[in-house]
Amino acid sequence: MERLAVHSSNIISVGYDSDTQTLEVEFNSGIYQYFDVPEHIYDELLNAGSLGSYLHNNIKDNFNYCQI
Image 1 (tube, rainbow, N blue to C red):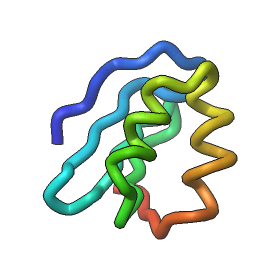
Image 2 (image 1 turned 90 degrees about the horizontal axis):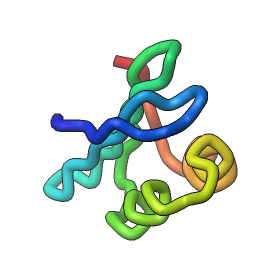
Image 3 (image 1 turned 45 degrees about the vertical axis):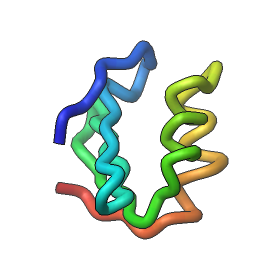
């Protein structure tokens, strides 16, 4: 999956596959995939003032995920 580089202290890049609704986030500590994420959540993440805060408040505990 192609990811976009982002400006964040803990997140390096973010990608999204609209066919599978998979959000992929590259953190300083590794890469995680979040499943069944609606595309508007990905869009909101990219436009958030703080990507880390948005991810923590809206994604982390709301979608199944795994480290790859």
